Length: 390
Picture 1: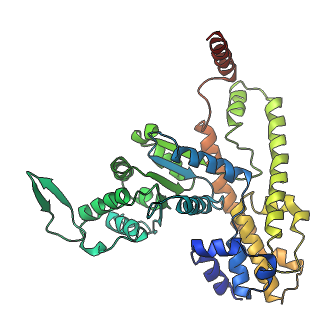
Picture 2 (picture 1 turned 180 degrees about the horizontal axis):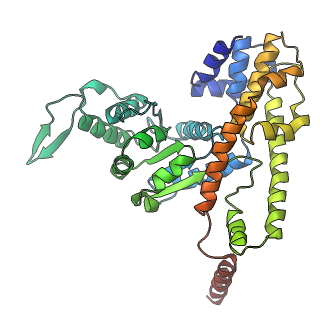
Picture 3 (picture 1 turned 180 degrees about the vertical axis):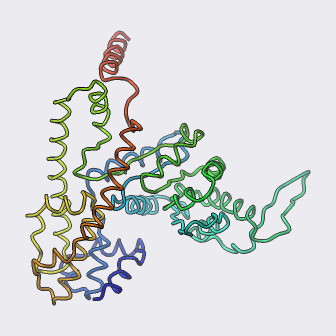
């Protein structure tokens, strides 16, 4: 199998029916698949793990509770599993909802530094929602009992109105917009966010924006979304940055001292990360579509290092190993691991991007409570006292 064939296999979008079929397949059935489908089978795997589950729980809590949060931002490093999580959530909504299109997913195409095409953006949403007669959509309004329509078919206002009507009429629960940064990066940020907010205000569904670290600054630098928007961070394993310990470390640094309790907590987290990563590796090994399974579970800490703790990169690496093994008639060779790894240059580029993003979150006090631990303890104590009196 050539590099080109491999790239085509993993880049061709997976349909829900395909993922469902592979998820129910026994190992005996997986062994019997042709080589090309073995690769497709393994790449289709969706592994549940702690960081993903935490992000999913937050997403679900916003979907099924009465809140005024209209725009949710799911951001984090490349390979963390943001798109896979959004797709999984979409499959869940499709399986439990009576709506025709409870979940609509669109990916914004990159146009270099070209001007943003909102018309193309709206068209992509209409196509994803299986909207008929897209090319003849036009804006309309009722005035003095008369229906007034635009004289132009397929204009920007017509597409915008068609999207809003489609989302309302189809009872769509969530619209996921992946790679939204392609719009925000090259257009006027406030104008772009005005458009997203206007769309959110006009429909009842939640809008999920997906992207890298830069997305956080772009979205929450826009003041009107601070109240009606909610950020969710999907990070990596083996990193010092944690949304549940950053506050303590920041307060320690402000005091100019070393917080030994916090250092201990970070070490405990890293040990938990290694344990969790081993569980992920073991789950993937259990679905290896060949009888000869490489002992990836013996090199978990190495895998954590060379994949930067990113489950997406881990699966990419293991899929590359699978292709090399298939090309060798199913026989495993230890040298395949070296061949499958990304180069130091590639990993360093990804690492620098991630560390830059993590530092930015730390400096922004992301997920840090406005109160100190001491103040929060006092508040909780008082609330307990009042509750006991009542």
